[in-house]
Amino acid sequence: MNLKEIAYSQLEEAKDRVNFLENKVKHYEDIVSEKIADDTNPKKWSESEEE
Image (tube, rainbow, N blue to C red; front, side, top):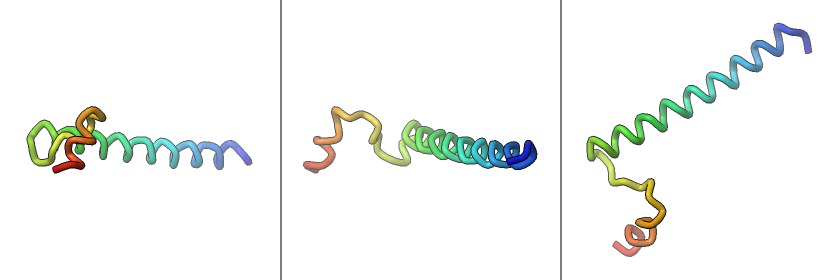
C-alpha cells in the first residue's frame, strides 16, 4: 500500500468512528429528552423485559 491508500483507509475508519459517535450522541439526547426509555442501565434490563 502506498501512503495515499493508507490515508484513504484511515479516512474511512475515521468516518466510521464519527458516524458511530454521532449515533451514540443522538441516542443519549433522545434519552435525556425522554423521546425513548433509558436502555443504558444494565440493572434495569431485566425489569424492562418483564413489562
